[in-house]
Image (cartoon, rainbow, N blue to C red; front, top):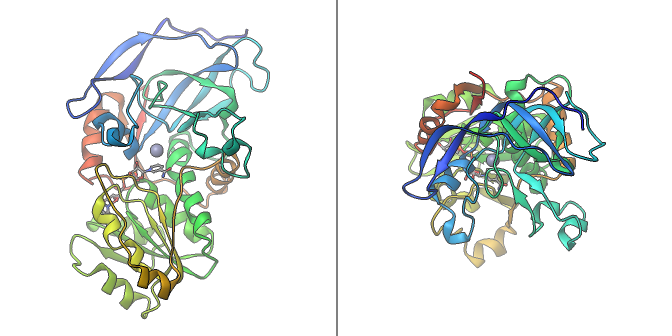
Amino acid sequence: MSSQKIPSKHTAAVVKNPGENCKMVIEEIDTPKPGPGQVLVKVTHSGVCHTDAHLMRGDWSAAGADMLCQVGGHEGVGSIVSLGPDVQNCAVGDKVGMAWIRQTCAVCTMCMGNGTETRCPNQSNHGRDADGSFQQYAIVPTNYLIKVPEGIDDVDVGPVLCGGVTVYKALKVSEAKPGQTVAIIGAGGGLGHLGVQYARAMGLRVIGIDGGEDKEKLAKKLGAEAFVDFTKTKDVVGAVKEITGGKMCHAVVVVAASASGYATAPLLCGKNGTMVAVGLPGGHVEIKITPMTLFANGTRIVGSNVGTRGDMEEALDFAARGLVKPTVAVHKLSELEETLDDLIKGKISGRAVIDLWA
Ligand code: NAD
Ligand code: ZN
């Protein structure tokens, strides 16, 4: 086993008591040694995804998705500092990413299917059932270790590893073609602002929907042709109707982490349009559409979850070629809890990123 000098302890944001009364404490914890098939990564930065907030607050408990580990985070980037026994497909010094999927079983029907590995029922996830990237050193199994290409600033890598790949995959799932129109509900947030850029790079026309002037400015700067502010516009459907000259959208990608984001989503689809559910608000949220609307419009409603390793390679390549660049605000680890609060309040435009060493 080759290794660099590694401290016996490192700084981590430890979540105590996940659920309504959760608390985050910055602590020194033991630095583990990588086992067979694992590496130890010195994490430099980690994006802060709304999923981290859902998990810590127990938003998804009713759906059986509780936080079972003590350190969150799944948009981590860093370099390998130590290899476990028998690891051969990577080397100390490699720049790598750790994303939501930590490991899949590789043998179930979903893993063997074409592009369905993200639905492996036996998967484990960083920041959910295994400690994630809100710490200075993390263990990562090699089979989902992401090799980071040249050409992306370190601070920009994390947001692509979950936010970017997820919204890129959702756009692919929507099957919208160049020249067609996609509405992105949540266009000024972490996933959404990347979605605007991926959509543009894929030749799509974008209507951004979100709330507040900062998010409007950001979505338009990144290429949204029109913006609907859901906090000011009572009739979002009517607004989109006016923008599209009555045709509505070929695709609607919902990345809002709120029930209200889903309230009108299927109705923004035009004939043969597709609504893609990505945002996962807590509580009981239903997507409402009548059989008559489905009959008349042929609306397709699908869900999309993160992306495969192949999708990840493509999503990173867009960023490496400069077609997609996350808009980030960098914070210290000690500011993580406050950052998550701001995310929940909808105050963050683009993506917050934690510098683990600041
Ligand atoms: P975020 O908070 O950065 O962005 C959400 C945005 O939605 C915010 O800008 C907010 O203002 C906006 N919004 C809220 N209500 C709205 C409404 N009614 N209309 C329009 N916009 C509205 O969060 P994020 O990190 O981008 O994550 C978004 C959601 O996606 C979360 O629920 C997260 O858990 C989920 N997610 C799902 C997957 C997946 O694989 N399906 C992957 C990553 C994240
Ligand atoms: Zn995420």
